[in-house]
Image 1 (cartoon, rainbow, N blue to C red):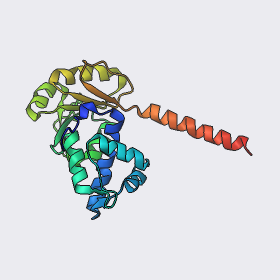
Image 2: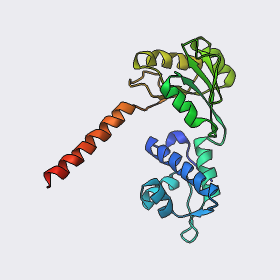
Image 3: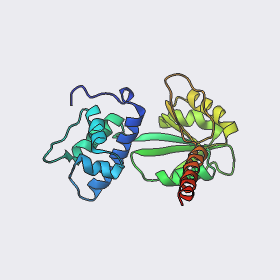
Image 4: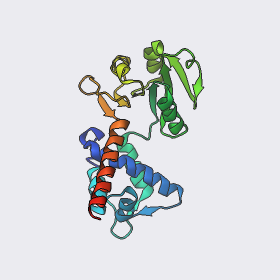
Length: 219
């Protein structure tokens, strides 16, 4: 469609919701569903119909009040915007328990492809884990260039994370998903998404405890 915005022009929260819609639409299509209404998609996404419609209008896509949205067309539109119709090659740094879990989760999940993993431990390198070959950290720049990798995932201890990020930047990655519990310093223009599992669990535990206290005080 004309005047379709680029992903960079869309707020991060909207990009996150579009990614969720993409997964939900893929599931619906696999089930044989061909059309979907905003209220149906909103229910699956735990959102509101108006929010769904606003998000889809942001990418220049509108449905029919009578027939809703054609799933295949909507899915193609979202994939085109997120540039996910082309396989994305990713590098993982850190093949510990978390790193292995990440590789296992994304194994055979297109279009993301873990093209390489890196670790300092000699006993982990030279092996193929969940379809991904593990290399020594010393080969990072060479492998990332060869495999044309633009996204890096960091799953190392906090003390090592900044050094790994620096290596990824020098190797040419343009985006980093960071699971280490530390904020990274990277050049302007390079996108970093921080996933702090401990912080997330602390927040959930805090609000769960608040709910328990409120229930106890109301008795």
